[in-house]
Image 1 (cartoon, chains in turn red, brown):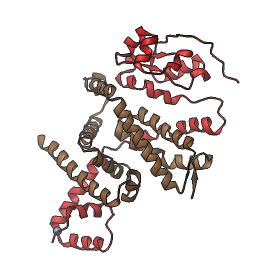
Image 2 (cartoon, helix red, strand yellow):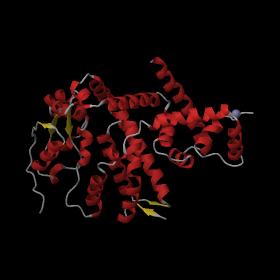
Image 3 (tube, chains in turn cyan, red):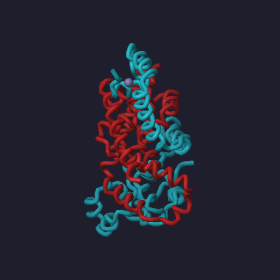
Image 4 (cartoon, chains in turn green, yellow):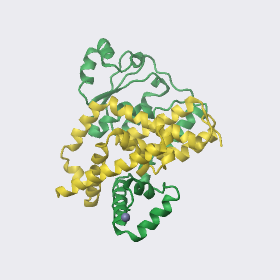
Length: 178
Length: 176
Ligand SMILES: [Zn+2]
């Protein structure tokens, strides 16, 4: 009797327990049909794995992100990392950097959160723009006050953003302690 | 060996061992490297902030993959509208991109797209299992720990996913 396909799949993964493993192996030696079945299964796996991303690409920011976490949590960080704020602004980068307009709220307005409703109450005109789909704005409970405007601009510039800043509800920026 | 998430040496060890795996798991859900990196960072921040002690490095890894997977799935759900918009824009013909890409890169991209479509078409319970198996190279036991299902269940799902993918990918080839 030929090998059940599910068993063959487990065999392919090296997950078949004895005595089945040996039985399957022996059967394969004299059954071309099952060998072919196994080969087909392997081919599907190869095809899927060919869609894998290169290691260097996936690991490109490994050291950088570690350094950020390290300084944030283990070095009594003078600075709070803000690389994660890309979460709020990275989508337009796909659209093309030029299309992205990033609004940065500095000071009290940063604490109003990101819901469109709230924003609409405070800044009706902004809410309309924000609804356009190509505009994101940076907002976070953790304040950007740890950074100078220059640092923020430098960061966004390095990411290829066309930065348009509107400053509302301005509060004095604190210069980070040296 | 016990892992304390707020201990710097332990944190470093786990980070070095699992960063790649987490980016990869997330990448195959969100398909955007910047977002994958952000979410990986967030997974490790949660790991630290949780201030947990794990019985072993493996247990820390299972926990992290679970968190990474959930962060990625939440991201997809939350940003469905934006992602659709981005997809539309990406499909718009771009002369610059075509000239830049060599022929082999175009084929590679095409292949990736086909595989991605086939995987995306799988039901969610099969999709995660086959991704953890084929891309992350996890064994059945690890997958069962990450997803909280039995090893037998993993075995069945891997097989079903393979069968469906084989059909889907064969179907695409027949078109040409
Ligand atoms: Zn046979």
